[in-house]
Length: 121
Image (cartoon, rainbow, N blue to C red; front, side, top):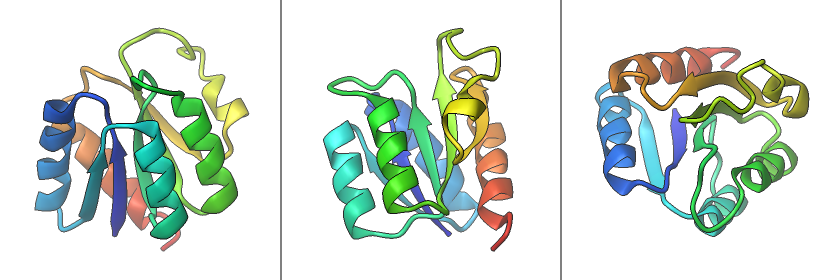
């Protein structure tokens, strides 16, 4: 299972990556939206863990690009804000599968990603 992690805070991204790796997933961590778009152009991913609060660009652009370039990739959105807490993110992004608070324990996030990676595969 190929997972792209897009997280501006490298330490947090590495924490998520270690938990996903323990579940046998192949992960790639990027910290910038442009790097995420380059990865999505070059490599297939089944799931994308995407922080909505990216520095240096818009996570929404990354999600839009993913829906165009890799329409079967599932996106697990993570945020520390209450924006989209009404669930409207699912209306905006057909590839959205989960919307988690940034405070979600990494092992729980990994379990959610594992669930969506195996869905339909």
